[in-house]
Length: 107
Ligand SMILES: Cc1ncc(COP(=O)(O)O)c(C=O)c1O
Image 1 (cartoon, protein in one colour):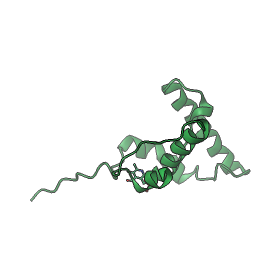
Image 2: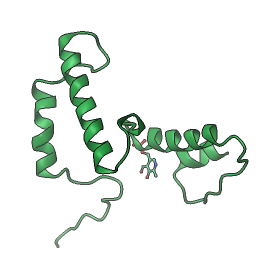
Image 3: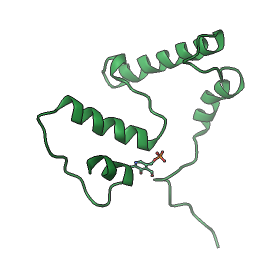
Image 4: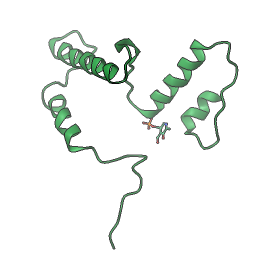
């Protein structure tokens, strides 16, 4: 029986070109971009380049681009930003089928 993977919504195969683009960051550019040392500075500059490229792609300003590390952080950042920038708004409409991290913030 041939098995097929139908859970790409949860995790998916990384595209070859993404693996290729990421290899330098596994092999040589692995410094912490928040650190003051040279290794970190190199990575920090690469992240800022990426921020500029993403901003250009969607016609935004680089400072409007926020990189997050996971789905939970992304959801929380979006929701908390919306709440903080719109304090006059008192309701969020959501559904029971949202991810737990969305419903937790909404509650
Ligand atoms: C909408 C949504 N938010 C958050 C998450 C959790 O993602 P992570 O484990 O990367 O925090 C998922 C995971 O499936 C998700 O579908």
